[in-house]
Image (cartoon, rainbow, N blue to C red; front, side):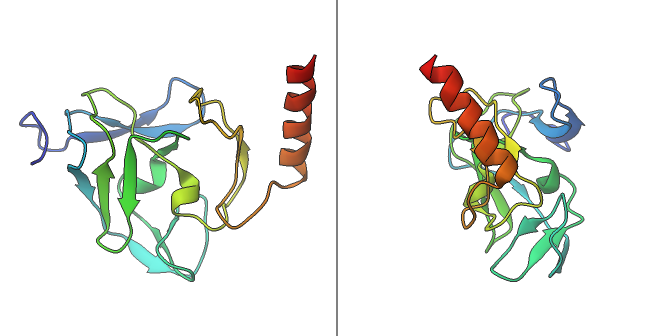
Length: 150
């Protein structure tokens, strides 16, 4: 299918409004199931801040957009690491920030972090799928539990 507009490059990297650094915004509308972007880059063994896991031993870096996708616990996109495609999980409007669930691709994150995505399913502390919360995350979650109980 593709974008609903005739934009040559329908994505842009920008500073996010939420203060979490760079993100990727769609400049076109997409329907659930559309391939939003096909990506390529340098595949190697090193885990870096903006790499994404391709398989158990390899990560991809040097991508134009993929390394800057924001995390969301209820994401609007997913990455297919076998075909190097970003696919819309739900309808996306032009101007929407594109999000993926980092735990869907990453066994271990370069750095764990607090999440404020405000999704009903928000996990509050984001880790890779094969790791538990680190000491900072455990302390953060414990503080949240105390605040919720009060």
